[in-house]
Length: 171
Image (tube, rainbow, N blue to C red; front, side, top):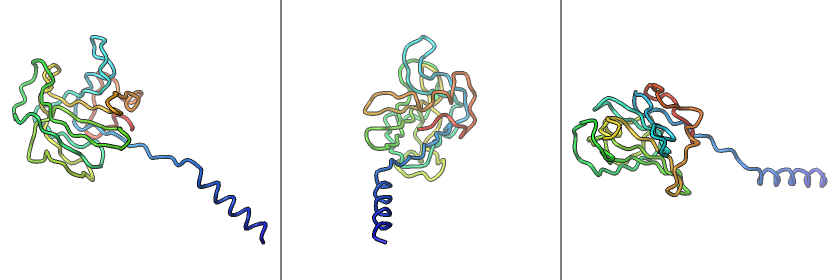
């Protein structure tokens, strides 16, 4: 009995040091639209994010459940398309901890644009003007400010049409 108890305790102790796998977070498209940019712009310069062109004023939904911190820096409600600069600089971000942050940018502020937990695909705003590329959204993952591209590599490609909630990638 004593020998089997010792082996049982050793087996339990070995389980305590096994690494546990974390489930990947699936990122669904927050809008219907065509991917216009991914790792590199068509000019060849680094972009490191996914841009999806959309229709002005279509709802922009959370791409996965969780707490979303919304920052409004542009209070305009027009979607003009074209121009230059970074467009509507409104942002919704979800922090995973350890410096890992997912961001959605360029949406128009609505009465739904506030900090909150989304259990499903709640509306965060409306498709706004991203200036250089017209109306759409910008999806970005960074760790301590460094852009990460592996989350969408192999899942999403430039000129691909994505339906709302179709998989963009995994975090």
